[in-house]
Length: 397
Image (cartoon, rainbow, N blue to C red; front, side, top):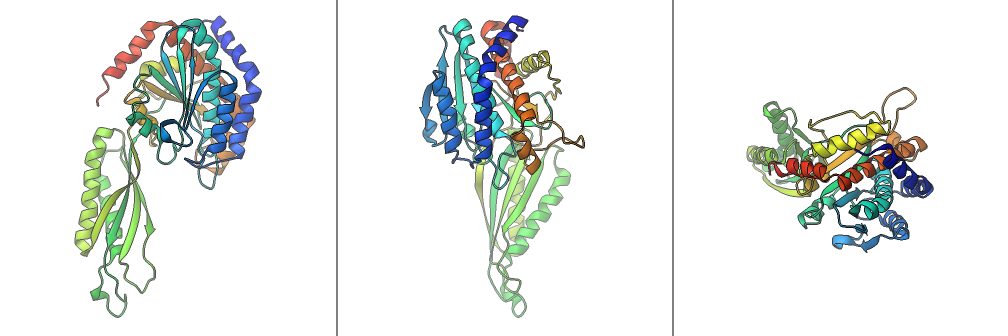
């Protein structure tokens, strides 16, 4: 654990960076870009990182808005991965606070340069686009990008300050039913109703929920339900998200979901097709040794951290795939409370407004300090890294 001298040194490194980091957060916030189109956000980050001597790789892993920025310290040491996100949500901008993630990750990487030189380390900042959709971290993980990293760390804005979450495994599926049109009033007997099949699927999913564990979530919408009331629909399509706390359990859940679709088709005489809508996410295995270390550092900085332990979080993140190849955590930083004392929740207009506010930015500075202190602990104490890896090595895979 770092002493007060190191804490002060981190704060001294951060202080002159604050105007630039604030400008970065505000620029990204005021210019929201959807996943795979975050060109302005990437340009602003690379400009800042280039200024501070990072080796830059643009269009990393053949993704137009991914990047890698590396600072190699003057001595050998651990490889610290810091993960940045910067995509917005359609219609409501940065209502998940990814502008602040970019600011915190860039700030952490820049602050750590001095300590990488002093203690020995490599700082690897990865720009990971499209977390809200097809999750660049998944493809990066599959390509081996994080295989030689010693840890991966990031912080995500949330409604309260907490330890790292264990997010759920996620599968996104399109289901299509194919029937036969007919006049719904004069000749319904000649039709095969694809909408009935879709409604049956929803009903079968609802019935299945009684026999699923409490940490299972299945939710869907009908994206195409027919053309007119007097035409029996010959085609319908739905989009479904299927989640479970563990990836190993998701496969069985998917099998049962697919059986529901098959039963819905069989009962209506229709045909069906299931296809992948978005890339699948694994569950997040937050490394508890690393998690505890980071939370202790945040507490020393005066931030009261709620300890979540290994309880599952009902959302999903592409960090999950990283956590299976590298010890990983994602802390949560509070956005503050509304005037009536209620917390701000993500994916809302109110959260978007707060993600560009001074209180949220000020709290984010604390997480830059905390993540930097955690990385310094790993640089200076080999036994900590040994304990982190010992836990990581026994993750069920």
